[in-house]
Image (cartoon, rainbow, N blue to C red):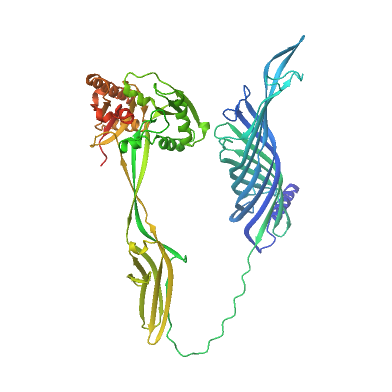
Length: 630
């Protein structure tokens, strides 16, 4: 054997001895902890941390900070091993400080002082205070047989527990203190606050440790680790953090539990005269003092209607108009429909436009959009507000339509879905289930009786599973006392059990039905509202992207689709008929289909159907009728 082979064999033996469990009394489970510090390497590509916080002309690309990590681990040694050491599967819970400073210099302009020309430089700084609570499943192994080095590989899921920043812009050159910004200071645009759009972090982690066994079951290791980011710090910025740490970890092997010695066998009991063994026990599913009996059947009917993104008001007020029927009343639920739409997607932005009619004080436009913003109750940073006072309309009835608030979602007017729930309740017979558990080693007799408010009630069922039948009138006044008595007897030997509970009427599972309310009398087919139009216009103002896509797909699939193009009753019948045809053609162009291949029905509504702004705007529409799904 060569000297090199001998030395290699000694190193392998030393590594195996270092890692081997000296005590076979240890179990496969072990716990541990770690503490480490090191740099946080920030990589970024952004200029503005938060909308509305200015930072002109500088792009932050990198930064560094000093961070601390504290972790606790639990692990299990698998049957499989690598290089004579078991593979270890575990999880690590950690707190990590990932703060850091990003800074960039910006050339502003040349500064001339007398005959001296100097560069005007500004230093932009963003200081991030950021920490994570990390959950990290990992696999640990010994990759190299010749040295006692342990590698841990895992994936960390990081939950932010603190995320804020501060930002400033400072003149650094020239150093003349008399040179200042327009605000009279050498520092401007100083802001601080919470980091926006902070997201859950995902990091790939690798750690190397050199274990040192100190006592049986206890292991101390110097450790070096790095976590590579897989996601950005926030959903709105290109910004990642790579923590590099050096520290120490401790692992403790849990001893095996030693089973207690079995107890000595009991002494044989002396023979006794035989006594019949009987018992009677009433048992409920819950030990609560009060039982809720499902006796109220709820039926919930949800009415939905397609509505334009506009809300109409009484003259010179912020009181919404009342509808004459269900469709008009639901159409005026625009605030609820807008709120549901904004809650469905936090990235959406809303424009609220208040309007005052030509015969009103212009201040009503501002009053109306302010009223709408208060009623919406959503983050005002997502809202832009405008006001308008249109000129006197060509038709007197249109003054009513100028008293409104309109809504644009991401700059577009959408067809919304308004919903109303109506609850109906019916009282039904209720049941209180219980079990009668009987023990009887011979032939015995059983009796069960029940009372509510002292009055006998029916007990139904067979075997141990029974139920008390309770009519709704018995619980009309609230909680009542239920008494159940059981008796089991053999000859002259008898045992009984009495259980009492208060019972109250509760609600059964609710059933929900959904009905679509519409401003149209079309019954045969699936009616979809595609577009709404302004008065005397054939340019779509409000569009339902969802229904446009559905109708386009149906046409391409060969379904027989027809259009119902309608107008209000203002103007002549001939002009309205031509206007309805133009609206149908505009929608066909929007769908990208040939209008000649679609059945088009023009509908000129009557005066009775145009008595309110809600009905008139609904009649300025194009609806598609699809074959109803069977």
